[in-house]
Image (tube, rainbow, N blue to C red):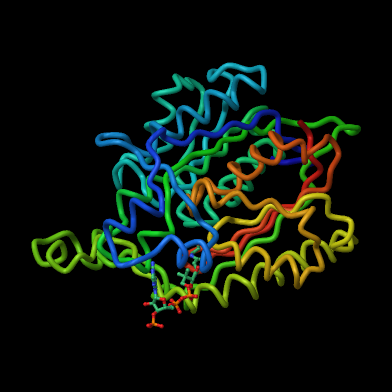
Length: 333
Ligand code: UT7
């Protein structure tokens, strides 16, 4: 039985992107698009793409090993693994199981979290609960996606947006004086399902010659609908989590939004009254890596010297489903 909840901190963070780069110039040779259109409408310059045979658990393993090392533990110390992904290696077994085996995390149980672009934030919150309740001292939360495996490189409306990558954090118990996670706020709205989905390959429409011929195993998106929902909900969820913890947006030191489109991030930040100096945008280098964008942005913020211990950090995501998420924390690394 749970008696009292423990405070939880990030003890390690690491990310990984595959070496191969797909530039806007490369895409100009594949579809009817231009570097100018992509830059102006999305802010993306290039994205990283896996080579043949490389899957989500491979990227996840690279990120996880770094996070485990930074936390000063071994994989055997992990009691739980949550992997946020939309592109599992296989429908089953779960990528969490494959990752557990690759890491030799002999004492961990876990599962995949299907929350699309909110995958990292939802995996983080799930793993955090395992530590908060005392069920384990160390939990791994991963956001990893090989979006190139479900992108139609003949569809200019989607193929310019996405890239591959992974990020992982180790969560551990914090003592009373250490910076820690403060709160999370999530919601889902299934009415948005058709706006962003992969129609075939599940139980509704199993794979067949027809589904392949009709290119139904790829991402389909009504971009404008997702765009408007993302701007509105990012602001709404951020205001809610700040207000209920008695913070004003001006007290946020770093706003780390899901990286789907530069215009979504700046519109949400403007509505919250956050200046550019408090917003991290790194999608020009990676595109939208779905569950990996937030850890990739955190890692870049650290590299740029924009995160210091104790900073108030606000994570926010909107993704297919729709899924909406926010996490408020004091930076602990
Ligand atoms: O991660 C969470 C999920 N995803 C998102 O958050 C993405 C949300 N949506 C978006 O980022 C934007 O809606 C897009 C970047 C996808 C599209 O930008 P937009 O400003 O909403 O453009 P649009 O879809 O309204 O299209 C404008 C025009 C269209 O031409 P017409 O119909 O006006 O003649 C498109 O066919 O731009 C055309 N277009 C392109 N042109 C050149 C669409 N994609 C391209 C392209 N290159 N790659």
